[in-house]
Length: 322
Image 1: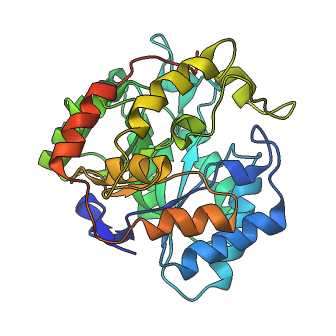
Image 2: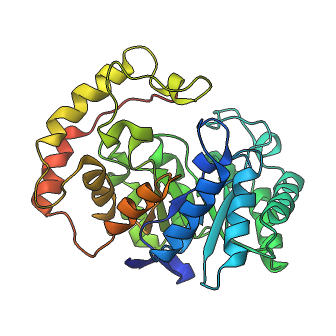
C-alpha cells in the first residue's frame, strides 16, 4: 500500500481508502455484517488506514461497524464521517440556507451522535455532506466545526461536494478554511480536472475521490439485461435504458486495457490515482475479494500520461442521480 499526504493535515493516508456506504445495510441490498467486518479487517491487513463513512449510512449502522473494527485494531487508523443536511436535500438546492441545512446545533448534535455510534473519542475528519459556495457568507457552520475541533471532538474539517458540481466549492478551497474536499472523480466524470484539482494542489487541500467505479458502471459488469435486487437504489440510478448506455460507453474503454491495467476496475481506480491532487480514492467495498483487488492496485505504478490522455475522449457528461 502506498500513502499520500492529506493536505495541510500532514497525515499520511493510504491512497486507497474504504468507502463504507455499502456496509450500512440500506440502499445497497445484500450487505452482511460479518462479511462487512471481515472486509474492513482485510483492508487494514492490506495497509489501508483511511475509512470514510457517514451518519446517514444505515442510520448510523455503518459508523457502528467501522467503530467496532477501529477500536479492535492497534494501527493508527483515520476515520472520516459526515453531517447530513438537516433538510435531507441531496444535492443542496440553490435556495438552501445554512439555517435549513447546517445550523450550528444540528452540526454539533450530529457529531455527538456519530461519536456515540463509533464509540470513539474523536473523529479525524468531519465533513458536511453537501455544499454550496453561497454558504461562505454565513459561516456559522464553520464556527460550530471549529468549536468541536477546540473541544477535541474532531481533528479536521471537510466537505462532500454536490454530485457532478466540482466548481461549486472553488471559493471554499481557495479560502483556506477547510482541510479536505470529497468529490466524484472517475473516467466518465473528469470535470474536477478543469479547476478543482488544480485549486486543491495550489491551496494544499486534500482530495477524497469518490465513485471511482461510477456506482458500478466502470466495473464492466453492467449489461442492458441485468437486474438489481428489489429495494436496491441502483434500480433508480440505472433506470430505463441507462444500463445499455453504460455498456455502450464502457466497451471502447475496454480496448485500452493492457500492460498499464489488466481489468476495467483496475483502470478506473488507477485513473483516479494518476492525478497528484488526489489524496485517496474511496471505492465502496463490502467483500474481502473487492478489498484484495482494490488494495493490490496501490503498488506505486502509475498510468502512462499517454493513456491518461487517451481516456480524456471517454469523459461522459450526464447525471444519473437525477
